[in-house]
Length: 231
Image (cartoon, rainbow, N blue to C red):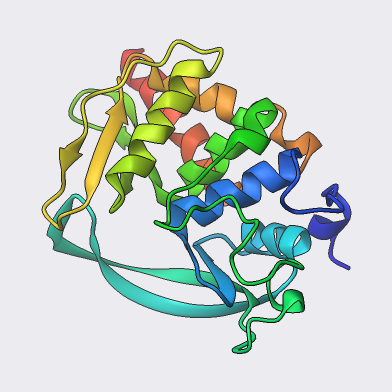
């Protein structure tokens, strides 16, 4: 068992209300896919992938991919991808998918929309998972500010993310939903609120191990750049 797995408290049921379950399903919603026979989650962080595997089981595969940047399809970036696959039994047996028969009992309805009620007491971990799944953190050199945004093909999921942000203890206004050049939807947290919101998201995350180290480093570096810009 790796050091990452040893520091993560794994729930008995990955569908019950628990910080690790909330983090898992945030990732699934942000960058995953649920079918009758399996779950796949994609992340760019090796340690985060191993944490998700510790929570849900399954196997992690690594590959290097090139894809268009969500906000500007003229820009292509190459990055590592770690894909967690859970289940995959073609017969859809109970043992194939978290002990459930197909997708029944998962926090996803028949139209593919997510239900996060079971994780309402763990909104920070849930939002952190979503951000790491379909969000971006950057330093805006033109304004010297930190940018945090969410991009996804599912408009209703982003509307649900906005509701979660409304309920979080940090005041984090955000812009209206817009469309990217690739046809997805996106919105950004206001620049003035992004530092406080990002800091809250990753506050005390080492206590649970439920975070992607590379994403936290990106946030810290962006905050440092913004501070230096102000100085």
